[in-house]
Structures are given as structure tokens and as C-alpha cells.
Amino acid sequence: MKLALKELVRRPGRFVTATVILTLIAMLLMFLGGLLDGLIRTSTGAISAQDADAIVYSDTSQASFLRSRIEPSTRAQIDQLEAVDETGGLGVVLLGARVPGNGPRDLANVAVWGYELAPTGVPNPPADGEAWADEILKADNVAIGDELLVGPARTPITVVGWVKNTSYTGQSALWTNVDTWRGVLDANRPDAVLADGVFQALVVRGAGGTPQEVVTAIDTALAGQVLALTVPDAINEIPGVTEQQTTFNQILGVTVVIALVVIALFFALLTVERTALYGMLKAIGARSRTIFAGLVAQAVVVTLIAALIAGGLVIVLDLLIPPGSIPLYISAGRIVTSIVLLLLAAVIGCAFSLRRVLRVDPASALGSSQ
Image (spheres, rainbow, N blue to C red):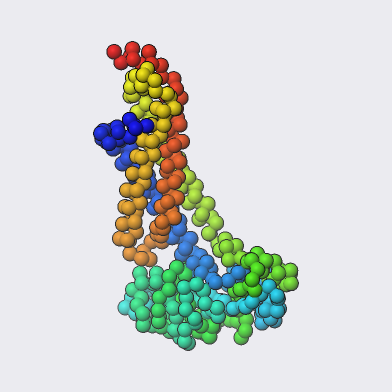
């Protein structure tokens, strides 16, 4: 193994081609993973931010806010349950917003939320006519203090501060108090007007049990009236989320397989070139497993170098891309996961060279080199 590592140091040119190709593959893997994470965050951020054990919809809503209606009487029943500590009303309306200074048709897509219990990272509800805005709106030239005209009725909402990672179905969030949300809903969606005290959904905080225990208690007490879901389950019910994850995971899997094939082909060719060298090593007592361990060590080092270079380049790319222009989110977890997958592919790829190493005969290999 020491001999293999010394070769990397003394003859790095032999491994440049593999390193460059693996760097490009690693960049693609990390970029696609970041794109998947970004798409999921922009679709589910408002739900994943909920500081709650459960989200409750009406039974026939199919976990859709727009189809759900929770009456005050239903909320009262949930409040009385021993497993429940407190509940908060929640509602949303999806609209376009006119931004000061932008063209009349250059609308920002917004999700106007009315809430009682503050999600993680969102302050308590602001005053009437005001909103905490998701920072993605900066890409639409929105600034603190701007008055957005929301919906066809051009309902005014003033941005008073920024929050992060709270988009919903790709639309930037505006977090308002309940009265402001109802005003926006009444003015722009008269077909969806709700009576006082009625919400589209409830966020529920438990009294000490697990989220699943809270969900079970609500389902048992109000069977046939409501649909209670944990926050992760509510996220999975958002249209398109599961499909996006499945599609991108398949693409990521193919990318890892490509990396495996590249490594396998490179080290298979390298093994053929070194047949005489391996024969000489075996003639002086080297074992096949020692030679193979050297191959694996070289593959791991080359792959690790390529992955680290790719990680740095992807981070720089993420910093250069303006926020909100594309849904890219590069995290340390995604980079580490990509590196681990590539290292695993390197080890598996080298395994294809094991048979050739085992078949090297010292006498014939030395004879062919003369």
C-alpha cells in the first residue's frame, strides 16, 4: 500500500484524467442533490417550519389547505383532549403580488399565511396590513418597507422583516396575522371566504407525548371528522414532493453508477499496464490482497481529492448564484453524503480489478516483460 501511495505522489500525471472526470461527476452529483434539496425546501418550507406535533385538516380535504375547513366546534373538541397542549389556526391563499418599481405584469408569486402560533424562525404575528416576508422575495426586488399589492384586488401588505426557508409550493411566504389573511382571502378569493373562527387547518402542540401519539389521540376522538398528520407526513402529502424526490434520487443513483463505471474502467486499464510490475511484486513475496489494497487506496485518494475539489467548486457556485433565481441549496450534509457515495463507488469499482490481480502469474508476467 505504501508503494501505491508513493506512486500517487511521484507520478500524479497518471491519475489526472481520472481525477478530472471524477471531479465533474462529483460536481454533477452535488449540484443535482442541492437542486433536489432546494426544490423540496421551496415546496415544503412553510410546513416543515411549523413548531407543532400535528397538523389537522378536515376529513375530506386530502391534506389540502384550500379544501380544508376546521369549524370552531371541532377545534374545541381537539382542545379538550389530554394529549393536546394548545392549538393554533392556520390558513393560506396563493396569489400574485405587484412590487413597487417592477412592471405591471412582473408579479411575485406569494403565499399569504394567517397564523396564530409562530412557526420556527417566524416572529409573532405582525400588526394589521403587515407581513414577515420570506427572503426569496429579494430576488423580486422586494425590500423592507415596501408595500406589496396582493391579488387582483390589490390588497396592500407592507413587508416589515425577513424570514428564511418558509416557501410553499414554490411561492414565497408572507406571514400575516389572522385578520390580514382573512381580508386578503375575502377580497381576492370570494368563493373561498371563511366565517369568523373557521380556519383551513390547525397546528397542534402536544402535552408531552410523541407526535404520533398526538395524531392517534385526535384520530380516535374525532374519527371521520378530521385528518391529523405529523409534520413529516403533512410534507409528504404536498402535491409533487414525493414525485420530485423519487425522480431526482433515480438521477442521483445513475450518476453514482457512472462514477463507479469510470473508476472500474480506469483501474482495470491501470492493472493491465502493471501486469509485469505485479508479477515482480508477487515474485518477491507480495500477496494479491496487498496489491489489491494498494489499488483501493489509490482509488479512494483520487476520488476523495476529486470530491473535495468538487465540493469547493459547488459551494462557490452556490454563493455566486443570486438567491431566489434557482432553487439551489448546498448543505454540508449533502456534500458529505455525496462524498461517501463516491468513495463507496470507488471501492466497488476497484473490485472489478481484483480478479485480474489474482490471476497474475509471476513467471509469465516477468517473461512477457522481457
